[in-house]
Length: 122
Length: 176
Image (cartoon, rainbow over all chains, first blue to last red; front, side, top):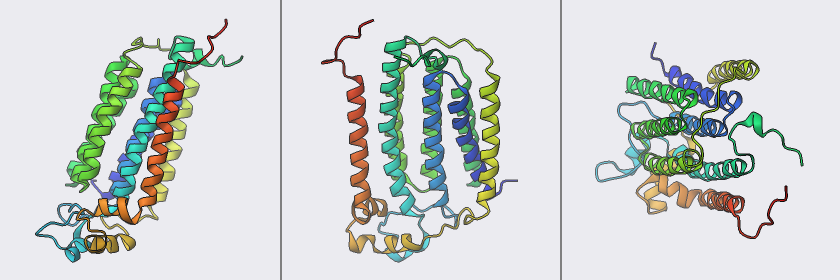
């Protein structure tokens, strides 16, 4: 039952929770929470792709015991880690932007309810 | 190790369900924090300590931002009106998405055997070519430094956008 593909499927299910919150919820902050959960799931998926399953995972850092050739034979993939590091920090920036928009919408309409806010004329 | 990953992922899914379905916004935000720390633990066990540290810091900052944006302003729950169209559309789209994802997993390399064409060269040459012992630092600051430059620009632009949106000084008062 615990196969390797089931990890991928659980991660996609976590992303699906975010998509559901983004579509079906009416509270703006719930929609922002959905976007945050989608970000977490995608970052985790990219790291899961770069994992190597031979025993315990070896971080891509050299020290006195692990030399360069042994690192290339054993360590996990460093490339998705570097790009996900970028992606996490950008996620913080977009979260700040979304929160600022939500605060401004609250100042104008005095509510967080999306079905109240859709009077967008004028 | 595989069982641990499954337990952590179930924990995160339950945390996200709590975050989406609860009525109190403070508990929703804190449940998102629990999901984030679960992601951080998972990164640590997957052999990515740099990302785990960054995730913890970003998680704390985003909790502060979300609490400032929600609970500090308004903690009222929106009364539940059963919106069947949105729920059915959401679940339908979710089902299609998961089916397409499972179909696409057949073309990927299996879990635990990554396709490391360029990464092997990065791993074996990072100490000699860049002087960095940590291969992740070698990749983000030397091999792919332009990506990091672009990241800094995106971060700058988004923070600038948030500041412009939140600014009150110098605006005309709204005439009603």
